[in-house]
Amino acid sequence: MQPVLQEIYDSILNGQQKVSSVKVAQALAEGIPATTILNEGMVAAMGEVGRLFEEGEYFVPEMLIAARAMQSGLAVLRPALVQADFKPIGKVAAGTVKGDLHDIGKNLVCMMLEGASFEIMDLGTDVSPEKFVEAARNGADYIAMSALLTTTMPNMKTTIEALKTAGLRDRVKVLVGGAPVTDSFAKQIGADGFAPDASQAARLALSYVG
Image (cartoon, rainbow, N blue to C red; front, side, top):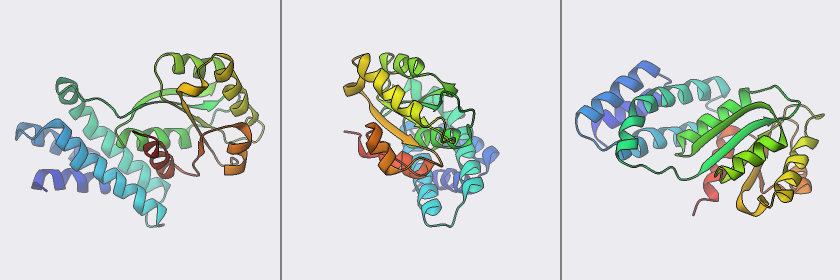
């Protein structure tokens, strides 16, 4: 790996936002292709962050600062990716379901998915089934729903039913997660997959690509 790519990788792993953006700019100035910077420097680093999280070496705070460093570098890289006609590997519409205003978990999932080269449509919190349906109509390949309250979990099923009614259910993969959500609940409501944390959410989405 070229030295500047290693520095980008390390800056993300260590959560150094300023270093990440500076080194991405340096890599571009050195003529390294934007897609190489993305894949070798950034996506690889976020993959390692996910591994460290799953092995208990990183926790949510470390994961968050790493994801923010990735986003800092991505802000510099994005115009070059547009010029290079870079295509994301999929489009994810993510939101916390209607009645639920919690967003930390959802935000982390969005960051990890973006770090895995997905395009993110962040619908925010308290998202109605109609908004998820609209996102599916607007080209989302994945619907990612989060709930932290047991009282809002039924709105995940309501959203899946709304996608069926709109004739869009077969066009999207529905992924669910959140503290009270379980794999058995995901199966019960007809979701395609369940992830207990942001790292596994990214891996789950990647498993459907191609």
